[in-house]
Image (cartoon, rainbow, N blue to C red):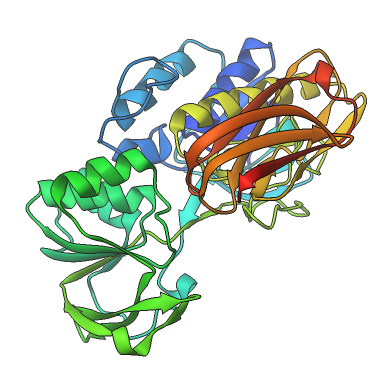
Length: 410
């Protein structure tokens, strides 16, 4: 084992979240270490070669690798120490054990930023019945095969789940000459962004079938097809079941934050990520969380903004500059699935609350109440449950716990 290292801030994960957090930590003068398990920085962005990144943060449209390279260049202009090909195997308290080609090392950090991203649900994770033949992939696996290795996973494809990665892969596979037979979604509405439904499905006449799922996978060596049925309350309607021949099934059925490393972490049951305060600090003092390990984001631009907060506050904690005066709670009310953060502090800053809706809404008001008084109201013509919402409010209007709710067509 190598000599023990000491840093003010250690960031675990070198994707867009980790890079943004490390840069902000360094700006404040904290001695910062960035650990990444892959051979290059960028995380999932390196396989996202489609455009649409950076519209909000850079005011221009970039591909995933271009967005990552912008931040890699910024990292190179800092004093941040970057360790690539380095795998964290244990976090106990503020001691982090990692392995890399040089061996095993322990680093002690005054503050830790979790930026490990998320993983995809697998066939076993959704209890997909039937056989396990070749040709069943998660959307991320298929994306990596096509974009990084130039391999087509199949020629006649069924996609289960209408998350953004699945929608994007429907278009990508169509570009490469595959036929996407249909996209199936067990919910009554898509989980993807409206722009992706339009650009990835509607523009290519790819059918999206709602309240529909795969009931069984068929095939011995290679997948031969799937049985598909409509659902009522997540239960397949037997009379609607039919066979769809295909040589590839792609799953876009949800993402799980990679929180397993941190022991004693309090999780939000709705996101499976950490429960945090406005500093992006978890229930464990000095451990912060940002990006998709916190909650799954729609846009990388939002990941960057959130992770900058985590980075600067981790540095403040390490340097003894973080204050916790006059705390208040942020509560998910009627029509709201979850809020993040769940706690904030009364100071001169503005408060930004991210949240998702429980269901699609039309002609409704999103409201913020404090002591039974409505202190914020915004009319929404229509919004999907799958899209992240945001409220920004001046804290001078807040003098107690606040509740985010939907008033109207919930």
